[in-house]
Length: 177
Image (cartoon, rainbow, N blue to C red; front, side):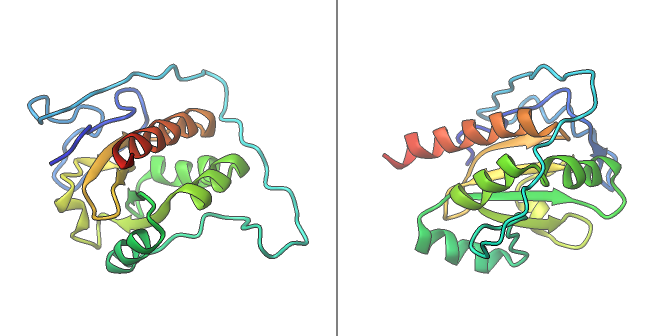
C-alpha cells in the first residue's frame, strides 16, 4: 500500500507503456494519490556538469543497481530508501532523463548519498507490474522493504527532479523517525 503515490505528476514528458496508457494521467481512483504540478521552464534543461576529479571516491555518475533483490538487501543494510527508475529502450523521454537529469552533478550527488538507485527496464522486467507503472519514465521511491513512498512521473529537468527527490527524502525521514 502506498503512502503517497506521486510527488510530481502531470506535466512531465513521458512515453506510454506497451498497453498504451498515458503516464501523465494515472488512475484517479488509486488510494492516497497526491499530485503536485511543477512549473516547467520553457528554456532547455540546465545541468550542472560533473567537475573532473582526481579522487576516485567521488562518483561521476549514479551508481545504478540492476538487481532488485540486491537493492532490497543493500537498502536494509544501509537503511536507505530506494529510488527505482523505470524506463524502456525506445522511450525518448527516458533517454532525455538519462542525458540531462541523471548527468547533473547535484542529482548524482543526492542520489548516491541518500538513495539506493535502481534502473529497471519496464520492457524486460516484471518489476514494473508490482508498482503499477502505466508509462515511462517513472521514478518510484520506496522504503528499504520496497513499500512505495512516492513517485515522479515523466521527464523533468535536473532542478525540478531534485525537488521531487528532496520531497521523497523528507517523506522517508518523516516515516523513519
